[in-house]
Length: 526
Image (cartoon, rainbow, N blue to C red; front, side, top):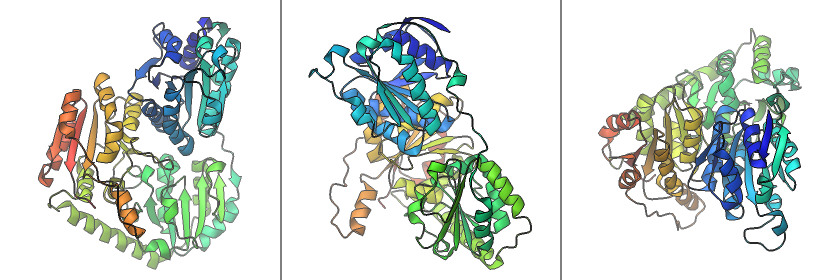
């Protein structure tokens, strides 16, 4: 496609040709030419949000959900700085995101102009590549390099474009998508023979199903059965991996660490399990299967990377006829049964304030099977991990960066990417406070997202960590508004649940409303 216009027109046309459908961002004078160009075309929409950090979160989680390039934009100075927190999430957890920031005009760079700073020096921390366009003729090659880097590394990339460069004339052919597409090959790094020896020698194996395992879940279940192994489901795979399987121990974390974790003589990690990794005993043999070599953990005794499905298929073939430890199998089954009985007892817990674990067990019965659930950061995630045994839901969460306030922006990015699927955000009251302005974005774009708030007026994780360290908890109390009234003032629906008996009916009403809805659940402090 030949472009006759300015650099902003070129950027939009090129991104559209590569399949980008939207740019999340906030208005700023350094990107005025880009926004002006948006009005001259209809292939890319600009999603105007309330804060730049949330724009980056939205792009990060759209990319994580789809595997495709997502884009966010901000102005110069404070707008660019605000973008960084969300961009760090994409960088740390492996999401292909392109960040475009405006910059002061070329003649003002380094001249003490307002809002000028060396963006490359700062963005270099959280971007696999960052560069600045100093001539209109260099923008296309820079855009190609940044996009290829983001896709190749599953990471964030960044370009700065001075305002006058945005407005510079451009007459050029765009680059076809084939030039930036990264084709997945079945290349395998590591020795299947060596890995097989460790697996065959294990008498008490556990399998941790991480993010990659979602795409090969049938192979994972077959491996569990063939090895007689206990199955631990990482947070990001919860809802996708064998929720009712007889050997599924569920998730692990601060709320639940099964004794078999310390009895296992071999732990097989399939994919990345960044949260669960810290709970693995240091003296246990760990092997890992991952799609990318750079995601292999350093403390593994054996590892293999490449096409995960191909690796597991070959491993299963080599394990035909393998005999496993029946006593270990029965121990795992007993633990699974005991845990399910505990959760069943919790499901009829009608104490007030509502137990957060009770809330999560009830969600098992009402959450749509095809739903996308975006989790914020907070202690409620421990109870979700313990109590939620999903069907086929997609779970979105921050594995390594873990910035509070990411839940609602993540849900918005997911809803734009998959508008036909139910999307739910779950947040604590502290997390929701930091991103609550984006409820207005849900209303502006008529996004029927249901936000569930676990309200207990406290930063529970921090309080409990301070207690565990022998410290006097301080700064953990929260002053929170009436979220129901806030939701209604934004134009969304608002509901409050104080009685455990009301959870199912109220949640179903909110989930089926067809418009933005917020449900405030008054929960006990744990």
